[in-house]
Length: 324
Image 1 (tube, helix red, strand yellow):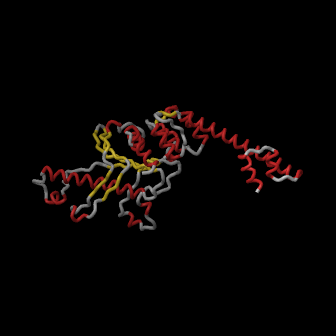
Image 2 (cartoon, rainbow, N blue to C red):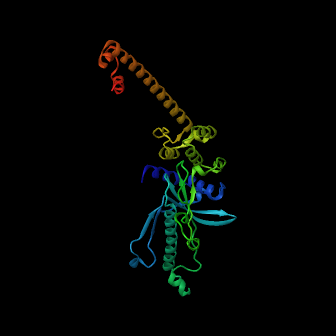
Image 3 (cartoon, rainbow, N blue to C red):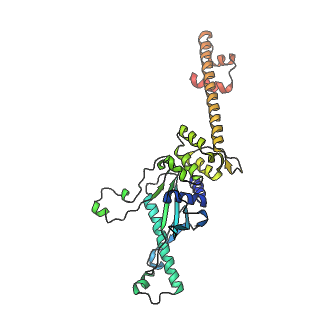
């Protein structure tokens, strides 16, 4: 697992952040999913295809980034859901297939667990032959699985958003019989400015920073209007540094970072370096002109001219590049 995958997974695994992402995407910011109601599950999806182990070949195993179960109240009804997040620092042009496999394995796992439960409890007595042979009872139900792709880059996502988009030149009558599979995508570039206020966690600052990471004026405006940037958590800053090269300095043991101050200091250092570089260039230009003048009027060599002018070793290296 690379640095980007490590820091984004660690960040999104936090219940507060995880819940915030789904409340924004599914419920338009309404606080339906509460962090305390989330329970993390094993991210490994392992499934033995139907037919029994002897005739099924090798099990299929995939690893998700983060998956959690949740009990949420909607319209006074209790809803049991399985929520998963896939973190992407880069565009994945086969994302619909990737997510479809993950979700299919999760549903197959639920079916296998239901069958195993019935076998253990021995409650097949009195069921129909169809139920007995399938192992999955007529009254059994599946838990919905919602997978959300969180894209940690400032570029617009130009990959396919559905399986149908991955087909080319197919007859519409054929496509009508091919089930589509669409991905749920949370991408900074697609979030309207007024919608960032629907986030309730540092995900607001992370995604808004990413959106304007290459636009200095807009980024400055965002930093100056959001006080939360004055004490952003380390995990959030790690995401910004890894995914968009923010280069925000983090001291050892520091858990809350003043991003505004860090950016100001970084800009000041950059300006100082630029000024030093400009001064160096001006000095070298002046020395170069003086050396040429001595060589032309006095007939001296470049080396002799530099000796007379007491040119330092570091400046000599730069001058020799110009004198070649």
